[in-house]
Image: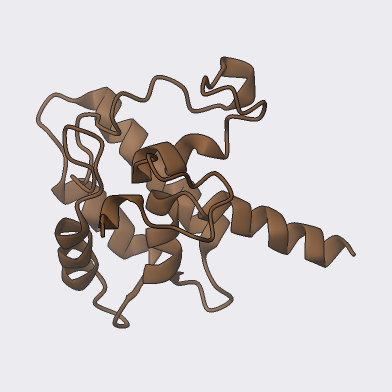
Amino acid sequence: MDVDRINSSNPANERNSTFLQQHVSYFDINKDGIIYPWETFKANIHKGKHGSDTGNYDYDGRFARMNFESLVKRYANTQPDKLTLGELWKMTEEHRVIFDFVGWIVAKLEFGLLYFLAKDEDGFLSKEAFYQVYDGTLFYNIAKKHKERKN
């Protein structure tokens, strides 16, 4: 069993899709395997790595589950398995690479946006929602909830 390729709740899941491919598949609107600038605001992804990132993807684009678990355990201090905006901010501060100003901004934007999109009614980002950004289901789940609220 390959834990980097298991995700039954992501419609884009295929046997040969990595977590990174599942993560970005939501933005591939025409499902041609290419994400065009007009399909997403987030272009220029290279194997999930940028300076000052959290290391939850390795250099081959595989999800580093142990690193993810360690990150949540280290920074979820207010409530177990839930993060506040302040805890996310601290996490990005402690993962900064010196003189990587673009990486600092990207990390703050990524995790700030994640927090505001996926926080619960109590103002916490759950470990599950945090994980969903990596396995590619977060945006599908947000879209589904939005559609349900409209109906």
